Length: 407
Image (cartoon, rainbow, N blue to C red):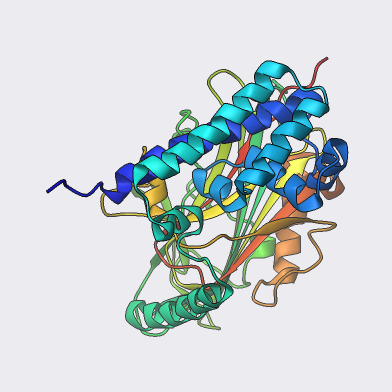
């Protein structure tokens, strides 16, 4: 009797074909329209239905197979897309590559032996109906309440703002300003100091630990903390910085504060953290943060400098710990079920959720603009918000690096 094919193998085969389609779709779009247009303008340019234009745009901007599969049109829709590119004057070899990539994906789905349920699981974590999405939302709230009871600690919210801008010394590199606000940290039973923050790190060698080692003489303050965004009356008994084998870590004990809860803001800047534009070695950018404490709401703001070409960030949650499958080819197997949407907003001052301390968050943003050296309106803001995100997950925002504009 033949052995059943493992789901991980089916996932790998389908995902590989899906990302080949993504690359072919992006090449097709960029060959006729510079710098990836919006979905509506793409639909107008190709003279196709708006929904089909949205699907093509979403596939081209995808950074993972789940996004490709969730946006995938049917065979007739894909044929219409291929025909539209050909009629628009797209190079014949690029059109043929798109046609072959779509054919390869259909073949991978058919030959892998994946069931309809398994394909839906790859595409959207098994959430193929509105009822399942509502059930997930209720389950996440129930999980939050259970985790608070077991852990004995909770936050009202976390809000992260990442400013991405050209580096001062080399405009082809990105500088990253990371702002982080913890609101309403409290414990429901005595627990002592809680680990709450570690400076920004990157595998490029310019991490917070190394930078802080060069400031060892200055131990009278926590270099990341922004006082105007924090609760008043904070001292080093309540919030302190510890040196661990893995770097410096900020700890906090809300029981020592008069209100028995803390709101804390942090800011950290790394110049030249990575490539700002697509290169042979760099294809996408990624920002992430670990969620180590139960909270009611997570808000992520990505501030993209106005000098950058259009960028389409995408958010996903991944489980962490255990076998650490969040790295390597099995990363998507650790993905939390469901899609978490975001959108560009007119102003970061609008639509701040009630769980987020809006006044202190705006003070943190004002502090950040002074560090960045750019006003807030010099950035486009992409906002994602998640209610009751699962604890011990990693929130990851990715986007495809844009082509460098011609001089």
